[in-house]
Amino acid sequence: MSDMPLLQIEDLAVSFHTETGSVQATDGVNLTVYPRQTLAVVGESGCGKSVSALSTLQLVPTPPGRFDSGRILWYPPAPAPPEDGSGAPPEPAVDLLTYNDRQMQTIRGNRIAMIFQEPMTSLNPVYTVGDQILEAIRLHQNLSHEAAVDVAEQALRDVGIAEPRRRLK
Image 1 (cartoon, one colour):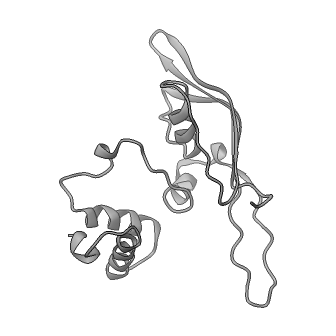
Image 2 (cartoon, helix red, strand yellow; image 1 turned 90 degrees about the horizontal axis):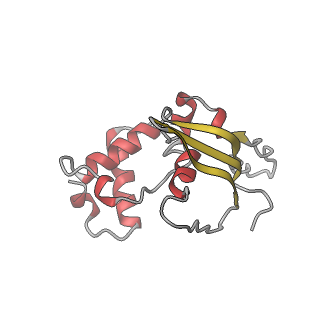
């Protein structure tokens, strides 16, 4: 395991304003994730697991949500070193809670991704699987349509989907 974390959440507190007052969803969440580490966040329903995860990508709707305190530090991975062995130093950590919507759009799905827990709302049955995968690829990568199809096909192949080109349709 690397000494440099990928992500640190420090003292995260998130609340939601309601008609009857404020509800504290998280208060003092701290965690660190290292490369190649698996982290399980376990707790009873309503304890703030989802709010903590959604906060990482600023997906908590504001309002009614509010980031009361804390930092979400992301350590972008260093680019691969050139063959001559010289390499750029790692990028400094950034507090994702300071990023605006445009900056977060470059991170979401491209550098940090989330798999949402409700599978029935993840894919729209009106569109083909291929259309939905291609939308994500084209949103985050500067590829031609055909190159995006190739990436989508390989992604389906990588997870064991038989006949991936046909399944895109």
